[in-house]
Structures are given as C-alpha cells and as structure tokens.
Amino acid sequence: MEGESPVGEELSGLLTSYPGAPETTVVHWKDGSATLTEVTEAVRDLAFDLGGVRRAPVACIVDRGIDAVVGMFATWIVGGVYVPVNSRLPEAELQRQLTDIGPAALIVGGARVRSADGRSIAPAAFPEDAALVMRTSGTTGAAKPVVLRHGAVLEGIDTVIARLRGSARDGAERDRPAMPNLVPTSLALWAGIWNTLFAFRLGAPVVLLDRFDALDYATAVKRFGIKSTVLAPAMMSMLLTDPRIEDLKPLRMVRSVTAPLVPDQARRFHQRFGVDVLNSYGQTELGGEVVGWSSADLRQFGEAKLGAVGRPHSGISVRILDEEHCEVPTGEVGEVYVHSPFATTLPPDRLVDGALRTGDLGRLDEDGFLWIEGRVSDMINRGGLKIVPQDVEAALRGHPRVADACVAGVPDERLGEVPVAWVIPEPASASGEPTEQELRSFLRDRLAPYQVPVAVRLLMEDFPRNEIGKVLRRELAAGYKPLPELEGDAR
Image (tube, rainbow, N blue to C red; front, side):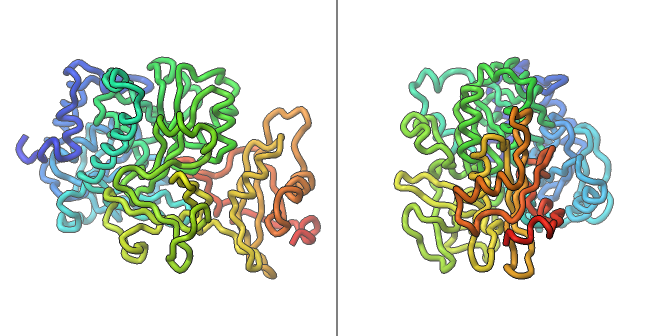
C-alpha cells in the first residue's frame, strides 16, 4: 500500500512479517478468534480508510482487544501515532482526553472510522519515529502523556526476549513453537499493548481477556495449555481468594507486572498453585520492562531472592541515590534512578546524569538484584520520622486473619501527618474478623512505636485501584474520617 511505513524497522512489521501461515490463528478472545489473513485484511481495510495521517495522532476507543490490535497496526502502517483511550473512562474524562489529543482520526470498534471533531495536532509535534502515546498510571497524581518510539519499543522487547531465551536449559527448548501469550490486561494499557507486541515479535498467538475475571483466566490457561504468562499482583489476589478456582494447571511460571509484588503474596501464590513467580520492574517512561528475572536466576537463587524485582536487563543502568544525588552503599535504601536506551524523551527536571528519577524507593543487594521498598510520594512524615507504608503493610499481612493491607498518611494538626491502615480480613475465618485493637497490638510487637497506625479500618471489599491494579492510596486517605473518642490517644 502506498504510504506504508518501512516494515521490519517499524512496529507494523510485527504483523506484516509474522512467521505463521495465512491460516494460522494469531488472536484469540473470549468469544472468537482471527487468523493471520483475517487480521491482515482488517488492518489493511482500516488503513485505507485512515488515509493521510502520517505523524498525526489517531485515537482509538479501546473496548475489545481485537479491535485495538487492528487499530494500532492500521495506524502504524500509514505512519500515524497511535493513541489508545479506555472506553471504560467516565464520559467527561474520555471527552477531555480526546480534546487533549486533537486526533486526526478516531477509531471506534476496530472497523469503523469517523472524522474527529476539534483541532488536529500538527505532525511536527511528534518525532519522526513516534509510535504511540500512552498515559502514566496516575497513582500519585494526574496521568501524564508519554510518547514512545518505534525502535525503542522493539529494542526493549528484543532485550527481554534475548534474556529469556538465553536462560533456557537447552537449544531444543528455544526451538519449540512459540506458546500462546495470555494477556490478562486491557489493550488500553501499556502492559496489555507491550505483551501483545511481545507475542507478535515471538511469532506467538495472543490470547486476550480484555477484562480480567479469575474464572475466565483459569479457563484460558487450561484451554490453551498456558505454561507461562503475566499477572498483576491484584490479579494474583483475586485468583487466591476466588472459591471457583481449584488449580491453574498447566501453568508453571508467572511474571508479575504493573505493580510491586510483596514477598508474602508471591509465596502464597506459589504455595496455593505450585507456580513460580518472577517479579519485574519498569515504567512507561522507560519504554517498558527494564529489570526482571530469568529462569536461570530462579534456578540459582530461588526463594532466597523472593520479592526482588530482578536484575537490570542488558544496556540498563540502575543507581540508588540519596536526596543529594549521591550513591548510597549496597543494601541501603534510596531513590531509584534508571538509565534506559528504550526511554522516551524525558523531562530534564527528572534526570540526573541521564538517568530517570523514577520516584521509587529501592536498594541493590550484593548480587545486583533490585528491591523496591515503596514510593517516595507514599512516604509518611510523622513529626519528622519517616515511615515507608509497605513496611507496615508487610507486618499486617503477617497476621493470620489479614488477607491484604494498605497504609497511607492522613493530615494531622500536631504531627503533620500520621499513618492509617485499611485491612481486608481473610474470608470465612473461623476466628472471625480481627479487631482494630488486636491489629494495633499485633503491630506494636513488630514495629517501632511511630510506625504503628493511629487507626485501622476493616474493608469488606477490595481497595480502590486503577486499571492495572495499583491501589489508589490517595482515595483511601481522602475518605478517612477520624473517630476522636477512639483514636485520640494513638498519636
């Protein structure tokens, strides 16, 4: 087609050079599937309708994953910049994002295009190799747009593939046909897009869930013989607590994505399902995953490093710096800075010697493993004493009747802010729900006095979370109402 981007160098090449035969089924979803021929024809039809959008934004309202696959490849074939917009956003927010984007074209339903209303961003606003615009997760503030580049995305995916293949036990394992890649997250999210592109780069079919449901996930694992996949920590919790799930056979390994995974959660998932859990770390601004485990790491270190997010991939540099931007000693906690060749154009105020200030607290151990200890913005300053919420949460999860916990700082007139805990009790516990007094007494035996929350709230439903399962601490804190007669002595 006239106007196509050069294949092999652009992300469009992941479809046009897919190694399967035309009749190969390349996309599965809950109610259907599509062959390579069917996807290619749908992409070319949509690309023809898109016309001249080179270096201009093309917005796609993402509902079904298959429509998003068609939309993004069609956009890339004609040289446009793909911008996914989540169909599940409130209408006002959805319209606000479309107004901000000012798309040259709008894709709805994968096969329908209508002219976009409003202004169109001039092509010069994007670099020549711009591929897509994603928004950050928005867990600590307003979501920010991030431009990702074709070559950087491909290089990042290839780096992860090389590490995984390099850790295979033998050549025969590397030469087997690629297993279907099960993607449990929406393709409105970077985690969903990245893992879909990862599958196409491998020449593997992709299985799209669109909306995560524990039973749908377990059913897909069995139907497609999935032995390795990705999961967000929140999804692991849903699988652990869903009474419909008896096992996850033949699943052998899960790579944790989108949010830090605490060690006790990984341990419980492994004990319940016999599945190894490999952590990983990345940010949209860094181009995706930059730190992770390999199978070789798992064989060498096993549970000794359970909870670490892994070691930096090839070409990635990780530094741990203090508030003065000086290196901290091995094993000590500081802020995580990452230099990544896959990164986007980064704001200068977040760079130190070319490394991105991630906003995460972490430490590097003597074997080069990175451990994430929390977010700088989550840290609670209680009258000058710093509290890392994750430390308190880990202690709470040690209680036999606590399924999950979240801790956040709330304003306090005397101390500035104080910690409050929200706890989800274990379902159907024979001993009943733990009381606030019991939990605070439990913590006093395990934490410094200033770390003990001034209040504990029991929740009968899940925490508020964003689309990728990260807990929205600020929403919990905003809804907190103190009970002076019960909590006035806790400060």
